[in-house]
Image (cartoon, rainbow, N blue to C red):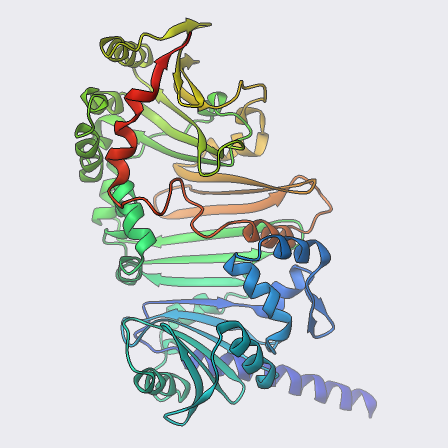
Length: 508
């Protein structure tokens, strides 16, 4: 009879696990604008963070966490072993346009530990508000009801009682649930992925509209609005984990005749890996977008950029529109942190042009008119800019501009086979690399067509745990680690570039 007792106990554990996740799912309202499910046991298992049922950070991860203690992810990971999280249940993040902008739900196996850890981290005290055990600090409500943890960020400042009432409504499961939507439910129940996400197009726009970071980014890079301001119905993302690599797939749900589809079909060009012949292999990030320049330049977002550029003293006289019109294929930017000056970046821009020599001549003529005659060395036009050299040239029909603070000795990204293969098929995408000890992490994500995207994370060490290395890489990302100074005025685009002509000098 021992076998019967064993399987009865196993079945009970399974049912309890299923009930915990199902109960949390039913708390997500039907009018949620987006949902993300996290398979906690799978994530912990693949990252090597489980010792029996206890959460333990591997030494290599703990070291990175300790070295980056201001990172929000590192704070979370550091607290995770003391949070009393149920390691057998899924967790959920959902978005709404009502009381809370976003809500995180997780099952607990030790509510007392969660209460103690959160109170210590947040600097508040749990108390009964509207009959709910919670604390309200700044814009966040932390509530524990039985063995459920709810963390909600309010859409606007309000009294604690109002936020608590809204939380009670979610926890009571009295409203219609998102699980009644069969399409969304099937996405959340994709067992092949550890993380599943569904986001309405209009919901994405609402959420991003509340973000200061997004607003600043859209001012400086209006092109992002092609996705956020379009008539996309929804975006679906699935991330699967194992120890060798991490896979990501996305689906952009939109009608074939949608404004989004028509826009991208008319402006996107043919990808080509040759552009990597001008990009050093040391770049931290490489962005690419294959475009038909003559149509691309007509986009209202590009017209906005051209208008901003035209207002810049001196340099705004360059006919940037005619330069962009010659682009025929990948327009690619490589970025790497300047190791000598904090907050500065080394940069390389490369593109396939229908008239690369004509573009170089136009830039040279402009510089000469401004009294900035370049030095011509090995078919490159060379200028001095602040602590960097600017090199402009053409290689195999690829027009490039390098802005580096060192003499390049490393090879090119074209020599990296996985990157070359990725750029040969990506209409639009990003490649990023990180370095932790002797392990390099590589992430690439791109659109194969206007509706489907794929990406993956892998390392240079076959025996390295890819899921663990992804966490280590994410831990090194600093808050506000952008391409400029966050303390500058939001309209600093003109002031930044207007000083360029003063710093641009011919080589001695």
